[in-house]
Image 1 (cartoon, one colour):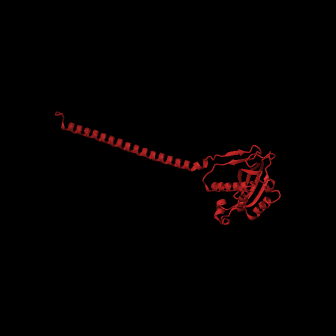
Image 2: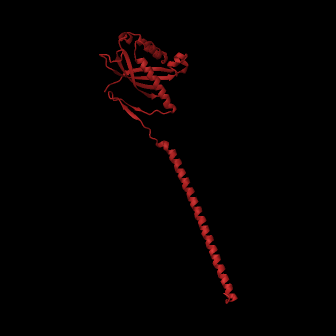
Image 3: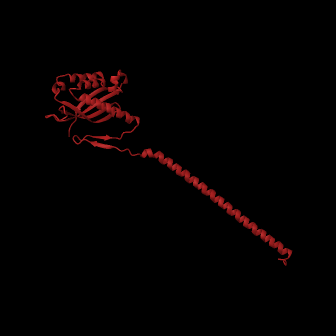
Length: 236
């Protein structure tokens, strides 16, 4: 090193400086490349996350459209009549229908049934749940010559089993039911075969017709039957 001339030393210094500069440039380029790669990775992750979120939202929006609503088909073995049994839910429409079915079932049981010891209560219930012309028809029947009051008296009673209440529109239903004549202990009466019927009922709710607490206990929502027709169901 001592024998080198000043020119050689100057050249060595330039070479050393050039190598250091090249190393620094390489390091800068590598650092920039790493930063660029990291930035691209972050962008890709953000895009991927946004796409995943958008897909999740889309699936969430589509889920109600693809919800499977279970139901059962009920087939009467005697008549072949088929109706749909849907699950109960808490939405207002289904709830209102459930309430209507309950009180219309009570109406059918009281109007079509008979028990010597409770007939007055049954008549009062029918009156409270009927419009005047509809009750007048029932009242004439129950006091007429063909009334079970005179035909069955204390010996037998009529049991009604409502099989279904089907809505034809918001205020019209068809109720399918079976009537059976039994002795006071509930045993089938000899000589009487259970019969099947269909009642078509038009109704509204009239809360103003309920004026006393006693009436409210029987008909709290003011069921008012406007039209009532019953026909025998054809057995296939």
